[in-house]
Image (tube, rainbow over all chains, first blue to last red; front, top):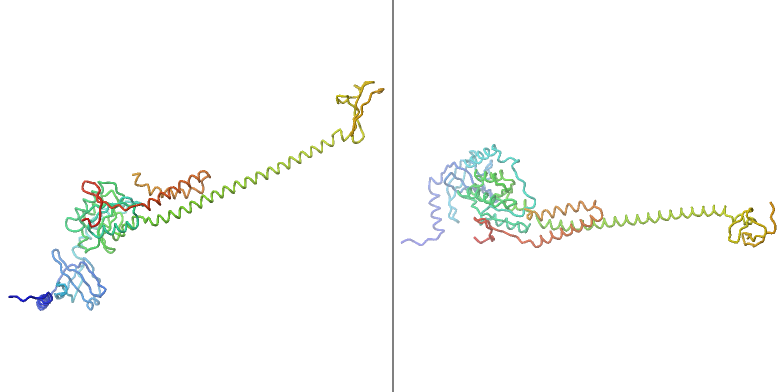
Length: 375
Length: 71
């Protein structure tokens, strides 16, 4: 009959079993680093793996502080340590006491090799990059329909621009079927045609989780797309071949939205300012034309005044001249002239004796009868 | 395709109007002002009334509403 044990008791038992084992406390291992994390508590955590298996590793603070080289994902290392059990979770881990770099691992080498091959083919050349429209309206989002990426994209897009229509084309983003599925989704978007731009990506994960975006068929799928593609895979520090071949690289799915979706809040403010400017401009224009009209009016009246003055002066001169040569002036000097009763002036030859004539002075006239005539 | 570019085109036209209005003759500037004001109001209304649309492209190329948490 077994005793009923607590979890702690079981873990404690296993811990003792493992840590007393001679082989498990004396492990020399060569493997590739993955998921490296340097925790704020000073410990390092990562996974060591080969093609089929992985083991969690921990480097405690005291030893971690003495390591003089960088440890990074894809690096091959030779390590020495012992297996311990973390009782809280019941997980075993390799606790390292020695680590030595051996260069880059298989995964990293494969990445570099493919990258160089595709670069030589010209797939990453700037001349193949398509322009991202400034004001995309229909955006295809190729990612998992359950992941963090679609959630972030919807959230950031809603905050910036509700005019944008997001159309999810769900796809696997990790696992062995993911590359084919991603290519199928890209082709689907291109068949549908009516997209301004595609965001292709997924949220953060281990280098293995992101690996689909390093696969050759995915890179070629992106290259062949007629619609511009923004690659948004993982976190800031993650680089995949998708990033190199795509038309724009965003560090995260949220960043992709921030890069390509204009913020309508800013557009709205701009429009408000533009309205003020437009009103100011029309007021300026009205003011300007008013001034011109005023100026023209003044010009016109001024010129008219001068013109009238001139005419007046001219008239006065004529009057003066006329006055000088007028018969009245002669009469005033004491002369008079003779005319008939119809006011026709009479030259001497036409005046006959016995005829009635009118003698005109400047201030009156006389009627007289001619008594005699002599030459 | 003309439909899709409406909003962007309007914004571009507004910029153009702002540039042209100063050099236009008086009648022309009044017309530009009226056109600009209408475009600005239309765009602002569009922004204020816009509703986010998230769809999902199905295998038969139809679009279905996509709500998170559906799956």
